[in-house]
Length: 475
Image (tube, rainbow, N blue to C red; front, side, top):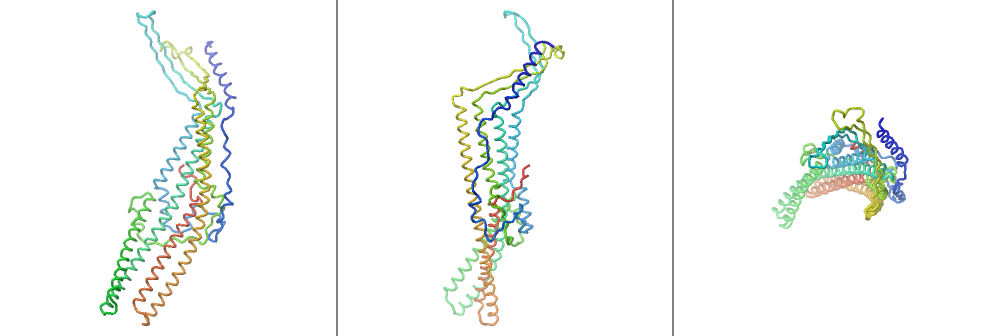
């Protein structure tokens, strides 16, 4: 074997052996030991209410509503929502970025082919020709002496986790929004029905008032007042129909459909789903730690902490191992001969020690980003505590309100029945019966409104606890 080949291979082997212990050198920058611990459990003063229980909450909480139409809408939203698709695309981007960063820690290689021809003319000091041909495989590897690449992989891993958490947060919000929009839709459908009946009562009452005015029993003021009531009822019905159209469009938007796409499917008036008698919330403090927005803030804190070490590695030297294995000859006919083999190895050390403060500024920026991420995490936890407390209180309040509205509705129904009996017995007149029925319809509408508010509070409660996301979404 030629002396140059032996020397080159010994040089390459020596460089590799020297680099092995260097790869185990210290990793600069702070290590991430987890997010700051906050006493979340002690601050959930409203976690126990008559409307909740410590039972384990199922992931698909909406199934407890037992509404097949709602289940189909939720499945369609999870499949077709453009907002969810965008979050899934961001997750794929972050995972691709992680794969790219991991690949940067491995050797880089490339095949090369070179043909060189040099002709020196008569006007030069020595007229001659030079030919050189080379086929080779080039390789380079940056030895991670101070952990800059490892910190970059650590940061990219945390960013991928943050993208996963943001996708989960988008799922949680979408599910709650669809349930709330569905409650609004069913409420508006019932409102259109009730206001149609109220309009009919006002029309009947106007006829009675007109008959009394013709008989001289009442004056023009009573007639004008009833006509004003009729106009109010017509306007209220028109507003209810417009609100119903908007509710249909909102549901279509959440399901990733154009306006009007769900009109035929949801044309039949359905009942507002009844919430369970008791809602299982489980360990609220533990659930809050799993809230997607909190997990997203925690992953951002981990990523920003890792980037400090990535920037600090710029203070220290970099070692790159360069190598080339190939064939070289001065003529194409000799290129494939055994004697044309060549091997080149070269360790390359660089140190940007005079950078005029660029590395220091980058480290300071990374530390400020870490401090910002830490503050954002604490803020996310505090907002989650407030959100959970308010949602628990609001849900309990809406249950009490519904019970009161149901009692008022039962009373109005009983009064309407008694008034119908009195009318049949000739004790009450037609206008009194119409007023009793109006009161009953108004109480019905208030009870339906309370049902919808309770269903919306039910969805808000599960959203505040971060329930409904799927761990394998976007994979």
